Length: 230
Image (cartoon, rainbow, N blue to C red; front, top):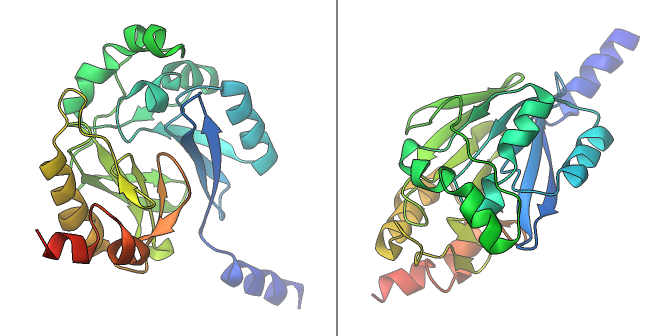
């Protein structure tokens, strides 16, 4: 009977869980996501405030096996290297078009008052790659426009995407930094995000989570009605 109960509990347990840890003065959504079957985890975009990230890892009771990066801006990647060294784990992402941003993390850190440590990831990511976290498999999509090397992560069984600074609730990422391109950003949303399904929920790089359906219906920059009127 106990074996049957354990099996039933496993069937009702979602395969993926996530917590958001806002970090840096820019309130960037560092995310910790983990495989519930193995309790193996990844930290996505650890831009700073490592004590807060460590506390969230401990509270979740997970073992971090890697760090994932959506792009190379200071608030997303500033303290990726120190955390990776501390935990003894690799860094995967972003695309190597963001080498420019990772190479200037120390300079940008001084500008924004955020610690920035220059590094290169253990693995650059490209369209069609997958990343694993325990038993989870996430698909990688290239989504330039905010930065040239921006990528997003999607877990189809959970209908969840981690989209960095491509899309926000009610808005989109800035495109006025070097390498940014607003038209390209819009194409990334329409051509890469929307096909993942209206019922997909997403965690953005800043602000509250939302769904693609909600943004298609109401987003002032990439909503269906807005784009149809262009």
